[in-house]
Length: 154
Image (cartoon, rainbow, N blue to C red):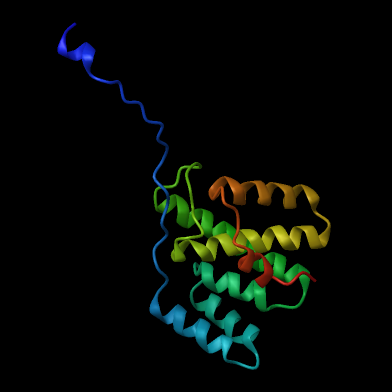
């Protein structure tokens, strides 16, 4: 037996590296804090996303803060589509993990989760099923319970 034949064969199944989205600008974090402390967070969050339209945390927070189901749906949908753009810009090619455990990924994942919840609320069961499946494809552990509970169901 030659040396090559006596070495163990190692096999690995690897996929794409998990995606990590970049951190939001410090001004966004300050705007989110100001909105959270405000008596009218929706107004401040609308101003924030108008100034930073690619802010995934901003769109998620605005979706959380609005009262009307259709407006919430729209905010989460904008954040979801902006998030897909951000994922692609950071190496995601339609496959691979986008984990909740990475804080900078949560804005996108919260938008996707909010879109799921609001889709159910407006009776769009096909969209609700698709977004739930996508959430689990991105992170097999699924959304953390506290994230699910943070999005109030109308």
